[in-house]
Length: 119
Image 1 (cartoon, one colour):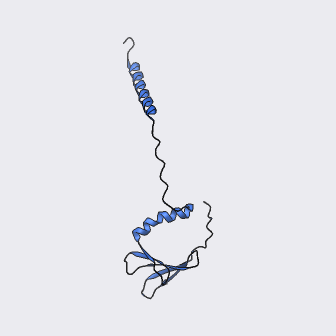
Image 2: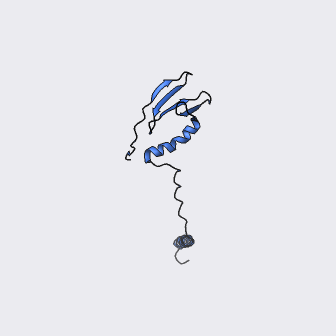
């Protein structure tokens, strides 16, 4: 996989906020300061956003659900729903009839081989 990402790598600055929450601060693609921190108001959730602006909260389960999308994006550069798997090819009626006839012919040969000479 070729890494064609032109953005800068994230560098995290870790610090403890005045209320005791541990925060990771970084600069996004547009140069905006962003934070990720444990949220004291929503137990077990992370808060994502910019300082002094509304953000959003994700629980551990929601982060876990998000990881495959982010992993796929980092590995392929693609974003969106997973492509639907190719359906199994359907067998035509002709194929089904020929398959059944073939099995019947094989059964006839087995019975003929089992016969003793002169029967």
